[in-house]
Length: 414
Image (cartoon, rainbow, N blue to C red; front, side, top):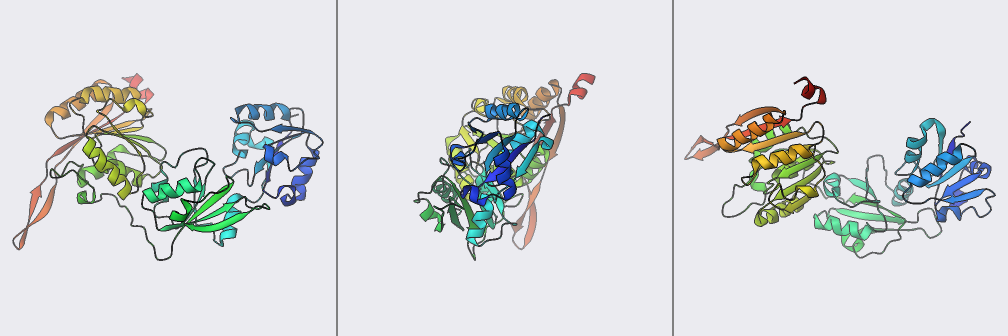
C-alpha cells in the first residue's frame, strides 16, 4: 500500500524549531528530500537523502515513486502551503496521500518582528517572476507583504515602486528570519533602493501615517489623462469607455489586447477594474505611446505596451480572452482575422467604429466567422454653460460592435 508523504515545514532555526511530531516523522523516514541548506540541519539522518532539484517535475516523480515502497519526508520552508511546494505535491498525489506539518511562515515571523497585525494585509509575490502588475494590485493597500528572490530583490522592488510614485509606503525587511543571522530594519524606499539584503528575505510595505492613495474610479474624466497637444481629444471618451469596458466582460486572470491604445485610457481603467488582468497594448504613433507611458505612471497601471501598427506586434502577446479595437489604421479586416484566429475559447471583441464603413467591415467580418455580433450606437451630449444658462452639446456618435466567440455546441448546430 502506498504510504502518505509527509511534508515538514522548517525554518532558519532548523531542528530546534520543529515540533516533536515533526522530528519523529523525520526520524522514521526512509527517504528525506530537501534543499542542500535544509538537509544540512540533519547531519545524522540514517536514511537516504535526496536534494530537491529545479524544475520540480523530476523531483515530484521521484517522490511519487519512492512513496510506493518507503516512508518519505519532504522538507519545505516555513508553512509549505504558503507559496510552498506542498501544493504541487498534493496536486500530484492527492490530498489523502499527503500530510503537512507546518512551521511558522516567513510572513508570520516578519509581521511579528515588525509589530504589525497581518489579517488585513495584502499578499504579493515576485518570487520566480517579475514585478509586472504589482503597482495596480498594491495601490490603495494599507499594508502588504511581498515575497522576493535573488533577482527581484528588495532594492529592485523599491526602484519599481519609486517609478510609479508610490512614496506613501515605507518598507520593513526581514532577513533570515528565525536564524542566528536574522536581521530586520525599516527603510524609506530611497534607502531600500540602495540596500543589499540577504536572498532569504521578506518585505512588508506599510503606508505611512497621514498618507493616502487617491482611488481610481470607473469613468475617469477625459482631461485627467495626458493627451497629445494641440489636437487633444484622441482618447476614448468617458461615456464610450464605460460602455466598452462593460461589453468586454473582463475577468480575473484574463488577457486583454488593446489595439490602437492611444492614451491608454481603456487599458488603465480595465486594469483598475480587474487588477489581476493581463493587458497588452499596441499603438503605432510614437508620440501617443509616450503619453500612454506617462499615464501608466500617473495611474499606477503596469502593463505591456509596444509601438507597432497592428496586426504587427501582436505576435509578441499571449492569446487574448478579450480584444478592444480603438483604432485600426485602415487594416480592420486583417486585424479582426488575426484576433479571431488567436482568440481563446469564449473570447469577446469590441470595436469602436466612428464611421459607417468601419461599422460595415467589422459587422461583416465578425458575422461571416460565425461570431455572435451586436451593435450599440452611442449618441451622448454633455452640458455646456451659455451665459447664465446651460445647453447640451452633442458628441460624435460611436458604434460599438461587440462580438463573442460561439460555444462549440452553438457552432456545430449552425
